[in-house]
Each structure stands twice: as structure tokens, then as C-alpha cells.
Image 1 (cartoon, rainbow, N blue to C red):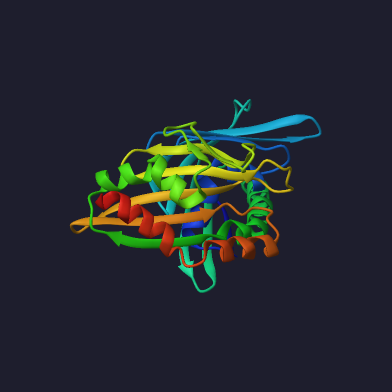
Image 2 (cartoon, rainbow, N blue to C red):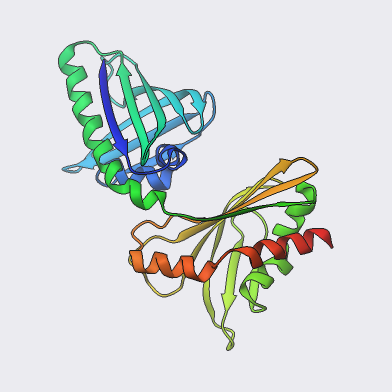
Length: 272
């Protein structure tokens, strides 16, 4: 068996996301990494990287998915017909200042193969540790609204809500792949993004960036609706601040302020 233990300076849910979100996986997996993930029991994944123009790819099936604390998945390298199928167990424990990670990989033919994999996992997880503080940065607000998730969802997906937040010169296309666009006074499109998660009544996420080139990936903004008593807990998250300079991140935080006007807008529309 190969085992790796490491403390990561990020909250557990964010470390879990780094293992299950393809856009985050490719940031730490290896050179020219690619990833596909179907995160469900029986779903499959594929991870690849390149060394000296040679592609190394592994794939497997999820046997357990318990967000944000545990993943169990099979592991096999593509193109190696002699290998045994391995089993990887990832456990994440909340700890002071972050998360304690334990990875166990079993099913090796001999101790030498196990040690090679242990070293490979250790290298990958060290890269993840370097990324973890950026993954952990987020701006988060939440409140309880005395309205059903269905009514709150109608508010969240409305043009009125987006315009109350971002101004009258705004367009929003509901649905997966829809665009959010903000225009200046001359009608030029200056900021916006694309809807990348769309679960009606539960969750929506869209990317967010200006049109001017930046050295970092677009950030993300998420709405999550959770039934709570006779109403709904609304959680707003601005996250995915990868490569964003600390000064810019602090500007984002200042721009959001307390979040109260944004939450109040959702409540007012839901009540209407």
C-alpha cells in the first residue's frame, strides 16, 4: 500500500472541490493536465498529463462519494495490460488552520511499484498544497428568506434581480451556457460570464471576468438554495480567485461590502 499524509491550508469543502472539479484538478495534477469527472456512484473519471511528449493517463470509477470528507475510486493506467486495478481512498479531516489529508492506494504487485506510486502521489499533493490557499479564498454571504425555494429561484433567475445588482445595462440568459453581460453607457460589452452550473431550484454558477485580458482565470459566482423551515437559506459565494493578486482580491471584498443589498434584492423579488 502507498500512503500520503499532508496538512493543507484550505477548508475541507474547498480541498474536496480541488479533487472533483476538472478546472481545479488540472491546476495541480501535472504538466499539460486534462481531466474529466462524472462525480456520482459508479461515475468515471480520466486524468492525463504529458512528459516529454508522452501522455500518461489514468482512469477509474467512483465507489464512494461523501462530500466533503471521503472519496473512494478505482485506479488503472491506460495502456498497461499487466497491471492490477488499484483502489484509492481519500479522507479529509477538518483541522486547525485547514484540512488533514490522507490518501491510501492499494492493490500493487510489489513494494517497488507501491513506492513509485507513493512518490508520484506525494509530488501531486505537494502541488495541491501550493494551490490550496488560493482555492480557499472566497467571499460568502447567506441569509434566511421567508419564501419557498421555488419562489426564491424565480427571483434568482430573473432579469430584475441581475439588474438590481449590476445596473440597468445588463443582460442575463437563464440556463446552462447562458450569458451574463454588462454594458457601459455607450452600449459596449465590458464585463460578464457564462452559466456553468444550472440546477433549477437548487444552484446556479456563472463565471465572471472583464473583457480586458487578465493574468488569471475568470472568477465564479454561485447561488445555492437550501430548504430551511418554512423558507429558504440563500448562500451567495464569489470564489475561484486563482492567480488573483491579493490586492485585487481585497478590492473584490470591498466592492461586495456586507452583501446586505444583494440579499435584500433577492428577498424583495421573491416576496413580490
